[in-house]
Picture 1 (cartoon, one colour):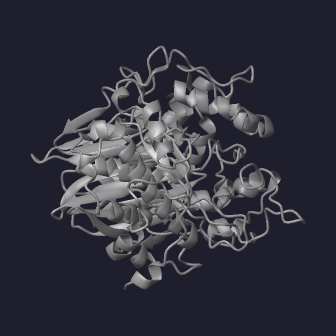
Picture 2: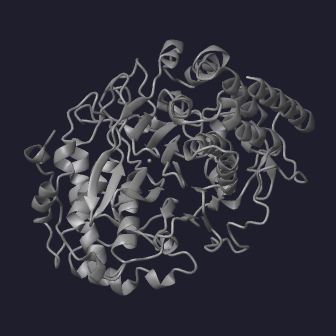
Picture 3: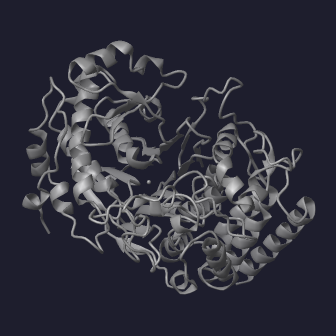
Length: 588
């Protein structure tokens, strides 16, 4: 108790000093170098090219990888002080909400996939849920047409957030450190400040329409002229620091009850929402067993519903296992064709069956069945594209994600967390006086009242987030995950295949440009390579060959930022951060 009290007093002093330095509200402080900074690390060069080197690390005891370097520093610091990978994961979760507020934060939610040193596996669902006043036709007008932007902008787009409840549940049930210890870095970061990178500047710029609609957001993320903070500027968020301090002092009740909860209800409902104080007070994370399968002898442990990610990931891998993928050159016409045909089948089944299992029966065993995959793969013609694919019948085979960060330690604790507020800066609603953005996760429901994923009170919208753990011969092998919407599990599958089938290094497997097809019809998209990965370019000749095989003309798309850690044969830990964002792995 004495050490906890001491930490609390120190944090209070730091917060007070920070407020004196910055004044009453957020300000830029160009000359200040915060405790957690990008000093010595450059995510992008002067021409805007992503720097693809210097993102990895090797260590004997522990490893973390996040899409912001400062969050990785936080995780490594926690473990250097004696915390486990689980303690570090919670600390990083709160820190990521400060330093990457446009993708995640305490106004959102997520999933955690955990394997403890003893071998226990747990999946924690702290995703947002629909308010109790929600209903299947809430986004339709009198003629049955979808009301523009109703699912994505403003208070009606927000679900009840689960971020705080989920992170603190993980800490209290599986961590070893106090709440005050793991939250201290995030509070310090919000108080002292964090750097606006080129990536962050672009995210703010892309969201200017939201800050015009909801000026509270602009108080933190726009300068005195109403423009996005320039890259290189250090800004702080004392409103968020105050909120995090309340949570540190009072725990879950500090967020879901009292002044913060009331401010959340007021801010959301002022923007057209339907929140009640009571449903915030009643929010609880849900605990499931992960879905499990195998791919060429590796055990895959991934996310169950309400995420579609883990089950559909297994369906994809089960179909790929029927082919010698290693003989196909990555991003060749034959490679892209096979992956595309597999994706068509998987996305058809996803659309038909995947939903919150508390509201719908989902044939998880059937979808993950290797026999079901064999039946579905019969639809694949290796020479010709299928025009479209209908869903299969997994019931016949039934039996008894945004930002991501990965954490692992030498004892075998493995944590993969993907969390989000959905679109950049979520619904645009910032909780007045408390400095955090509200999610727009209601957009992940279907507006079709007949869909298995239609809106219902208390229901969790379908997700694609796929935090994944991999074992080899029963021992830890890899921790990985990525943001990217409906492309998430497809990206995880490609990364796993490149490591297992093509024997790529983890760094290369992540950097190679990806390809997707996120529908049951031809909708191929591909990534333009980063500097250094040009040999994997999807060339005009490749596109011409795909069209000759019957595919529609592919389009380009952006990839998420996959964060991964691998246990090497000599017992050391290797981590690498995706160069597409601002991350760097850190170990100790």
